[in-house]
Each structure stands twice: as structure tokens, then as C-alpha cells.
Image 1 (cartoon, rainbow, N blue to C red):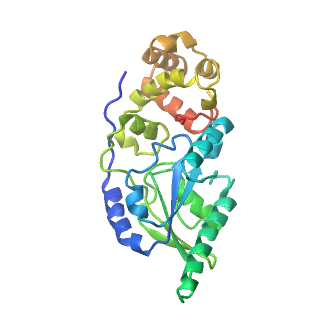
Image 2: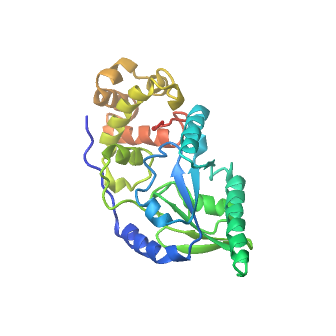
Image 3: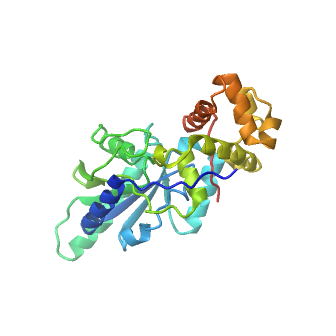
Length: 287
């Protein structure tokens, strides 16, 4: 079953991108944040245009939500492309110190160049950039060690740009999540919907849940993805054979058992279980 087209470009994102372009000339370092479950889908196509020779730090958040094997496979893939990924779990704080140290080192290199030109050192101005809900604000709060910006696991919480001082060495610009005006890659758009990295108004939850059930079948053949045999049957008590033949039939059967036949509620429960790690760490994308 194909899902209806997924598109989402609300006014606050369009406005944020305009403001972003106005601030880019003030920025020394771009800290790009991606979602470990979908590191390709959360890579913005305009990134290189925004970087324009600035230093770039790639942070892959939610490392806890994928298997170690998936993380290692992606780490190797990015390094082969000449990019060092920094893995973290901003919610728990894992890996955040390493991200901070990498940003400070980038700043030291910048100030060394300033000194060589007879200029005084200054705090590095870093922009945190990424799709909605990939964890930018949570990362900033961890770096500053207090809640200075609003953070929640849903898209669209940050709506304005804001500078935050991190010690004497780093100024962080927290920007709203940015999306391309049009999502031409609908497989990537589906991944964004599954991971809650796009507004819920962009998609039909029931269709996305059915697509997720089908996706689990194809991912099960790749050990790094983390799909246990009979995952849905173990969790929901519905025979795996039903799911293989018709995902919508599986969803209906699960709804009859768990949500009084309401498939929309069952679809939301399935998506929530995936997003909350109830189904275990699952990588939707692999290199």
C-alpha cells in the first residue's frame, strides 16, 4: 500500500529559513544534527549552500535508538566520505561532552587564524541546524547544563532563532527545524513521519503505520536494523503470518484485540511504541 503524499512546510519554518539566511554571515561553525534512525532522510539538501566553507560538525542524535551494529556501519560510511560523525543521546547526555569538545576545538582553530591575522580571539558563533524534532534544543540544553530553550519530542517546538552563551568560548544559535519547501523523496518523507520528525498534519497516521509494518518485513533481513524475529507478534499477540500477507489486515486484527476495533488508535499506538523504544532500537535506514 502506498501512503498519501507527505508534505509539510508551515509558515514558521518558511520564516525561520529567511531569518537563518540573514544570520549565516555571522556564523563560524555549523553544528548539523541528524536522527540516528534516519541519518540520510534528516540531511538537508541545502546544507552545503548554508555551510559555504564554514566549519561543519555532524552530530547524530538518538544513538540509543539504533543498534550498535547500525551505528558502526554508519560511522564507517560517513568516515569513508571524509566526514567525522559525533554520536550522542541528547536526552540522556551521552556523547554530549565529546560534541562540546569538538566544537571548542573548531573554535580554537578559528581563533588561531584570527591571531595570525592580528585579530583578537572571540567566542565561536555556532549554528545548530537540522530537521524538526531531531534534538537540537535538547542538545543545547545539555551543553549549557540547564533548560535555556524549550525542548520536546515533537516537531515545531522551536519557532524563533535565539543566541545562547556557552561559557566564554562558544555562542550557540538555536534555530527552528528546517525542511525543504517540497519533499520530493517520499520514502524519506515517510521516514520523517515514522520518526516524528515532521508535523503530524503532514501525514495520515494509519497509512504510515501500515507502511511501517511492511517496512519491518524488508528490514528483518538486515541484522543491523535490529528487527527481532516475530517482533510484532511478541508485542501484540497477533500471528506474524497475517502481517506478512496483508499489513492492513494485521492492523485490523491488532485493533480488534487492543483498541476496540479502532484502527486509527491502534496505528497511533504502534507508532508511539516505535518512537518510545518499546519495540527496541530499530534503524530504518542503513548504508
